[in-house]
Image 1: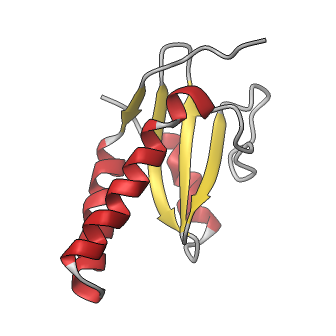
Image 2: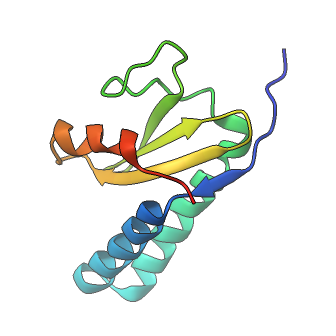
Length: 111
């Protein structure tokens, strides 16, 4: 059974997270390294359009339909929601953040 290819959309929160990750990387390492890191992360996010089902259910946001999924990218946890129309990337959180921060992801809206 082949899985449907769905478009990937980013929440405003995800875009802000990507910007913050870039800024942190540029200050800590270099703008070139930060740009490469964010580009790889975006490529991984775009790849969700046909790989969204291979990642584990987000154990912090359990549902019967298992619509909340997550994967790790280096030190970051990416949380996304599967809908009928698209894959919505909700947030990117550093792994050291608290579970309460992760649970807030359920309330993130896509515009």
